[in-house]
Length: 197
Image (cartoon, rainbow, N blue to C red; front, side):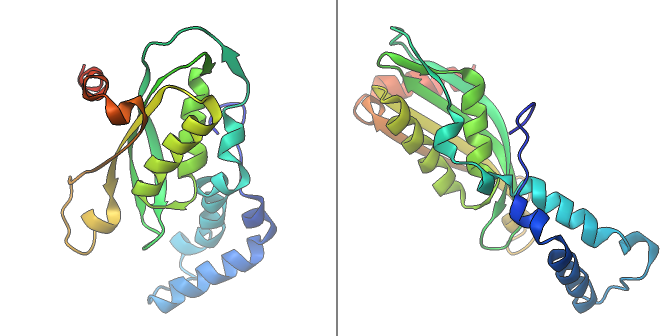
């Protein structure tokens, strides 16, 4: 979703006037003066932002992997530190962090950039971190049929840091394991050790 294949949410584009109207109404309801200079363009800016941050609704995450390659490499492949931004479906507050993906190919590999695109496709919608982690693992498991998959996602949630318990800097870490990663402690350990390097 970054680079040449940028997506936008066409439902947002198609409902631009309504969304701008409702953003303006929300601003009024929280006590703002919608006629002051700093807020005049806010409804339009919010709508343009929604086109981008909710672009994942325009993409089938399974199709993001695109062409796969027959390759006899059957050793661990890891792409780590894939930065993502998402929106909590409970508060519509941002959360963000890094995703780390490892898989053990069984004769089929994906282009490395496609793994980053998969993360984008899954995170650019209303989400919860647990679902993001499982969806990435499930899609890789189903589309590549590897010997195993392990996904670790780290996230900092504004709904926890800036409101509620107000604990800035706290991180949530989730993992999903499939195939041989589920049964092999040494394989999980190798993946986690390589993440720390």
